[in-house]
Length: 211
Figure 1: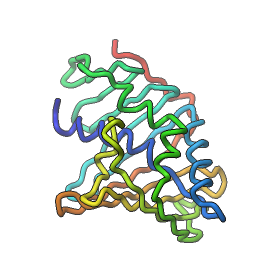
Figure 2: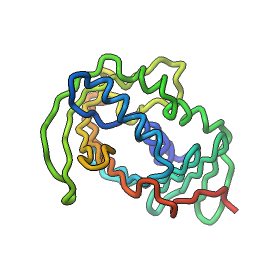
Figure 3: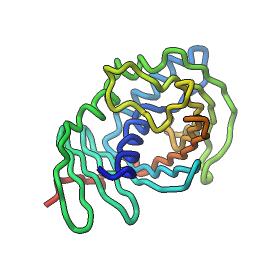
């Protein structure tokens, strides 16, 4: 499987696992509530920009409960429906020889998301705006090296110390995350990705098996 495709698939669970952190008395519990709101979305689009060590763009669409489309400009498109995965490249379609639900289902599970809260430190960065929309910004450090029993881990953000630092822009109106900036170190080299979410609950997002 092409290296860029593997990298884009690694980012998919990252999108689902990293979530905004409201700042109240119990930040971890508020984080879980924000994740619950995220899990309730029927659809969304996201654009993932890898900023360091090199630049690339990956686009993702999600349709509940288990449909994804991951696209790399001038590269392959991967469609995931339940446990089936398909790759489209050069006008050809091939079925991927792996159970795709193992990569994604745990990140749609509340018990697993609550597990991710352990050892998390949260800092309130105050009010701001993003594209003219009022937001509140938060910084949190998250352990992103889960046990080996958790396949499809967010390896794209894993650093040598097993942690990633994320800045989240959370809409003051909807309470949904609008943007994440994720930084870590891997093999002594800095990595940084920016994830921009939009088109929440859009009925125009329809993901079907390749014809």
